[in-house]
Length: 502
Image 1 (cartoon, rainbow, N blue to C red):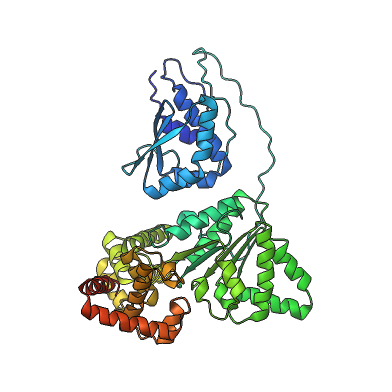
Image 2: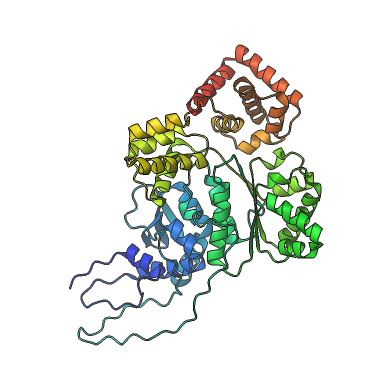
């Protein structure tokens, strides 16, 4: 009897509880080597720590063997390699080291097709406890023992989190360069819980995925730690609850909910607290209580912390204690992927040319992108027409979705940062390094030239600077553009890039 053994499949199914490592192997079948068995045992042990996260990241990793302590792995891209190396490899290497006595080193190969990924992001949640891996070869006619009935306690169903959208999960979030940092930080916040990236401050324009990530964090924590007490609330509702607690003289209950009976606090649209002094005071004390207890805090805003008007300085400084992760408008490739994902979730048949046209037409945010797709599908269904390119062109034109000259301050800041290889937060910081100051001045100049913004508005958009600073920057760059060919080349290159956004 011939039997081909695929070590990656064997390891994957063992880790996901689909194959028993003590499974009987027929006589004459090739057996797994000791190295392959050690690998299988090590990944089973590693997956047990965080099954859902393991499945997602190891779907982009392939095992290519191990020789003399050198572990050969292939990663789909550099981002997957970095994440696996930071969060999974220490445990994996410790397991291999414990069984081999060798100093484990990893040799990575980046890119290329993964024919045998270790795991699958859609694999069922089935944690297993690793056992000694031994293969037995019984007599061909030996009867198999009858299966034993196993009585186990019913699985604990996590309590629902109020206000959560079941579709907003990490699996349904499309990752691209515009949101990669925020996605990675959210994954880390969901897994570590209070020890890194605390607080996590996610900022970005309307409809770019901030709320999706916050809900995804709650879903992941609820799945992996059912006992965790999760509180998700918008800043507006926090204000309303605070006012109601004052009115009903129930401040002890209100404070207990946010300071003591909370393991994960998720607050959407924190900028809504601006100007509300008493509510900011209460949130400040709740923040301190949770942070000191190493409880994870995640907040979202449409602005960077230093851009928040009428917000107490002590709160702004605390928002910057952890990680500030920004989200920008998605690039064309990411928009195409978002549309395809949404069409798949909604069971909409969408031709590739329609998908590309919608992505090229809608550039502002993800919410409008998804809304346009749903509107097209709904109207096509009512008229009993297929969603084809001609139909999409007509409907999008009627809806006025294609609007030129829509570049925003955030668009210009993002493109300038990409051009000068800086982070968005650098433009808003107090850093006066020559290269950063020059990029900041160019961004201010382009904003003033292309947008109908006043100098005070631009000052607030660039880290709450005085309007005289913006006036000086605009005049300086205007003069340099005439006198310095290098500056003129930078500005012309940026204007060409902005032309593709508009």
